[in-house]
Length: 263
Image 1 (cartoon, one colour):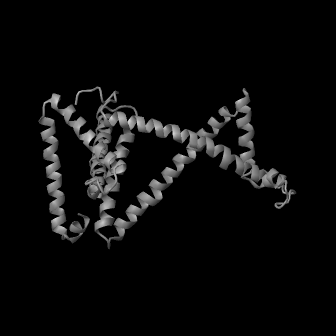
Image 2: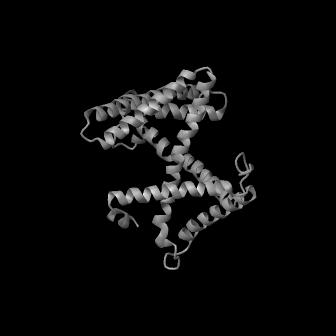
Image 3: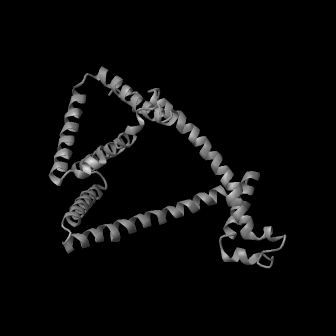
């Protein structure tokens, strides 16, 4: 399929994309026109068939599974879903911020900044992409992305560091034996990451039988052995929970804010 698409010319690809978009819009309105009592069974059937495809792929040998040849093409469904989810998210954000501006809610000027930033980013992104020789488009995109968006992200994560320190302070207060053990382990690990901690035990030769008592060795052992064992246990439990959730969604047994609503 990908080779066939590569062999197409530019106008043919645009024609295919437009046809797919019109077909998708038509399918959307057809689904909206269906009676409510038919929509849930249709979602259940599509979800179950999609789960069956991957179940057969991972549990049946390729020699007896006729669906293996369609694995790459079927995986592109995620790309299509993402393509529809992105404008849906933009539309949702625009509706929320539009209501804030219309109602003049507190902080409505932040919503104005949202629309201005989105319009500017879209304009310069298309400008630098399709006008390759335009210096203004490239510089504008670089200014917005490299010198505005990236520093804002770094600033956000740097602010989160203060909350992490605050949470660590509350967690490391010694009130129980477990908290004391965690405090000692955290102190040793931090010492093993700084030159001062390494200097405390630098008198122990690296080739001596007592080299295991060096602070950096103890810190490394806590991180690689003790900590990794705990992390793998947590990940193992999370994987089991994810598998249980996947089975519930696949078999349409999940109940919640979305699944209990009429669709």
